[in-house]
Image (cartoon, rainbow, N blue to C red; front, side):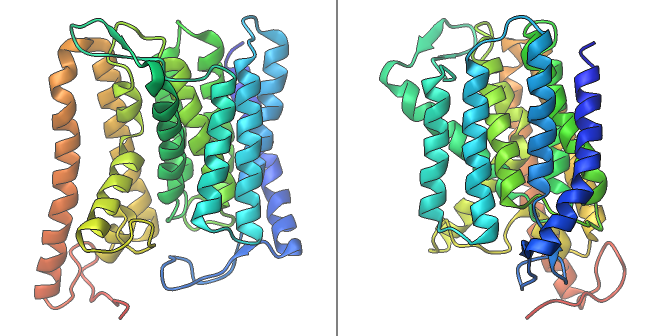
Length: 355
């Protein structure tokens, strides 16, 4: 029975997406091309509304038939609805990053009000450390950070959708058998995202927009708190950090590079890993597939850590260091290609670089 809701979410998203595509064209909610973007024509947004509706219509129906329903899921609904409204307004009219952050913090406070919070941290071979007054700031930073990390990787067709689907499936594997309702919600989110993916995979016919990428990030942040903070025997937040390793590491790496070069960490550029892979000659589809595999790498590491337990803690820094080493080597490969006269390693053809 628990596999019926994600199937329903898949078909709902698959049915709703073409409708939202037509609505976006009619209402003029389009993403126009510019020098930072990978598409060369106006693309309809509003795909995130299809994912939101598919998820909550299915989840609402599932709640009627499952036991263990608590008020915390109302917190997810209200917080994600605020995030959706924030992203929708940004897609239509545009918002400054200050207002976007204010709205995201407000949505995170809703989770706190419904007792979705990080109350303690556990370390390997040690007792739980209760956070006390640090519960609120750590929860807020985690929710807003994960929400934005997923939003920032939404720069190539299908990337945020696929990575979020993989993360939700890994969270399902992590919570299955211990938190039945939460594991079903993870599957429903994966189903809704996968139902949208055929229209979003390169070459995309519709985008998530901030509406969808912020929604997916917010839901993953909420799920990770609800699942991870119940695992008193494991190192709290390490597994969610691994599950969301790709967007989190990419975000921190880009911000560090901006800070090191003396620029604002909020200044948009083409420094994200998907931009750099495209710059090396990969097509959007190849870039997306490579980063899907990277997300599976982090997800597999999370499952390994969960199965082994605290003894695997020493492997966690190695997992992230290997990924960061790979990011660093991209710069060396790019320099080699430039020295070779612009012939790309992946295509064998001269790369047409933008000035």
